[in-house]
Image (cartoon, rainbow, N blue to C red):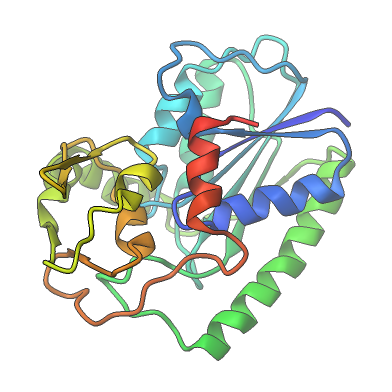
Length: 264
């Protein structure tokens, strides 16, 4: 099965899913969505494609939506999506993605959610290490089941409860909150100007100016900069101070950085 998997990953959950699926389906090619941000049209070279990405504010991340809109799907037959999210999800990703595909005369053949670890610590602190390990072990079993479905090119769409209000929340966030969200970031004096925040940002929204990061107001609110800062010098709002940072234990900052510059 020749398969191209397009992924967007900030703290490693979606990249881990993508890499794991690739080990289970021969002929898989991994392509990082941030590495294609400057392209105006993307034409897949395989008839089967997958979209793997995190849920943002109960719906599609802006980067994912923009990417799908510029996909040329003329020669694509089978499309699936895998959404990574925190435990006990509610979302509208599959409904909204399905709408975009219908405008291109295509349909979403299969769609799944994988409950992992929510990296949005401004809302809730991370669960205990033991709890995280259990959640990720359960997620790996879910990924194996998904790979079995995909290898047979079966039809399967996860049920999205309360998708309509979730979609409205996501739209409000994109239009009203997201344009000014990166004003919430602050940097402590412990910053060493290592540039990790600039390198991991999937939206290329950060630049070092005078040895300090500056956010340039096209943020995805993915919090990659917050979580991967080696000195934990970056805060987001008033509730993250002292809270533990997170990235998938099998994914490093180097993995995220490499994927931005090398679509693979």
